[in-house]
Image (cartoon, rainbow, N blue to C red; front, side):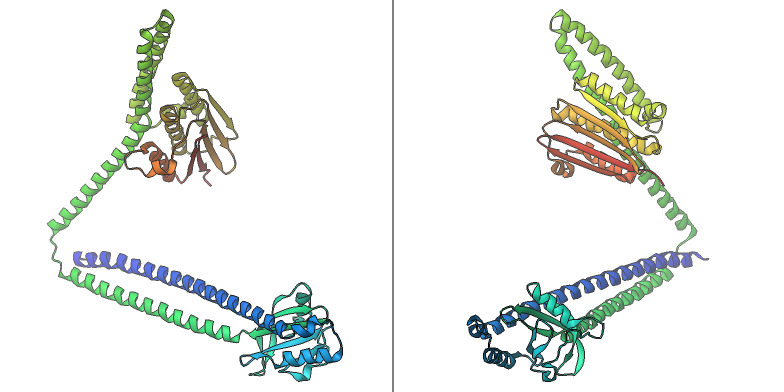
Length: 452
C-alpha cells in the first residue's frame, strides 16, 4: 500500500468509526429522551384528565346535593336525581352513569338498553370484571379504574379511564370517564414527530460524515510526502512519546516523593526541633533529646532506604517482606513513636490476596492520611483497620481531630495535593475512595476489589 493510500485510510477510517459511534450514541440518546418526553406528556395529560374527572363528578354531586341531603329515598326523589344526572354531559362522549351496589344499571344516557340489567358479571375484551372492579373502587372511598367500554361515537370498545364514588345513602355508584383513544392518538402524533426529528438528525450526521470523508480523502490525495518527511514524522511521534513518558514518570516520582520522603523529612524536622528544645532544659530533658536524636537518626536511615527504594521502581520493601497488614502495623508504630499520638491498628480477614500495586496504593494512602493527621488534625486518637473479605479489602483510617472542608480542599489549586494524590492512586487501580470530615473527626475509606 502506497503512502498516500495509507494516509487516506488511516485518516478516514477512524473518522468514519467515530462518526458512526456518535450517530449511534445520538440515536440512542434521542430515542431515550423521546421516550422520557412521551412518558412525561402522558403522565401530565392523564393527571389533567384525572383532575378533570374529579371536577365533573364533584359538579354532578353538587347538582343532586339538594335531593341527596334531604334524606329522602323514595322513587320520585331517586328518579329526579337520575333525570338530572342523565341531562349532564361533557364533550361528544362524556356522560355519567349510575349503578346500584349489586351491579344493576340504573341510569346510562348513551346506552339506555343497559338500564335495568345486572352487569355484575360483565367482563371486557381482556376478561376484566369491569363492574366488579368499579364497585370495589367505589366501596373503598372512590377512585380511578381503567377498563374497556363501547365508545358511543364509534360504537367500538375503547380503553377508558373511569372515576367512581359511592352514594351510600342511596346505595348508588356514581361515575364518569374519558376514552383514552384520543390520548393514544396524541401520543402517536408525538412519536411520529420525534421519529422525524431523529431521522433528520441521522441524515445530517450522514451528510457531515460523507463531507468529512470527501474532505479528508481530497486532502490525502493532494499530499506529496517524501520518504524523508515520513521518517521525520515518525521521529517526531517517537520524540513526543518519549516526552510524554518522561512527564508521566516525573509525575509519578513527584507523587511518591511527596508521599514518602516528604513525610519522613517533616517528621524528622519536628523531632529535631523538639530535641533542640529539650537540649536547653534539664538533665532529664537532655537525655530525652538524645533518645529523640537517636530515633531521628534511625529515620534518616529510613529516608536513605526510601531513596534507594524509589530508584528501584518506587516500591516499599516492607510490603514484600511482611505484607500489607504488617506494613500498616509498622506504620502505626512509627506514628506512635514519632508523634506520641495513640494509634490503634486492627486487621481482620484475609488481606493478602491483592496484587502488589494495590498493596502499595493502600500503604501510600495510609502514609498520606497519617501525615495529614499529624500536621493538621490536632487529634488525640487514631484508629486504623484493615478488613478483608471475599470481594476485596477495605482500609479505614479515622481520627478525632477538628476536621476540615474535604470538598473545598480537594479542588483548591494550591492545597490538597496529598488528598488528590490519594484519589488519583485509587482511580488508577479501579478502587473506591471516600473521605468524610466534621468537627468531630475525619474518616478515610479506601476499598480495592479482588481480581476475578
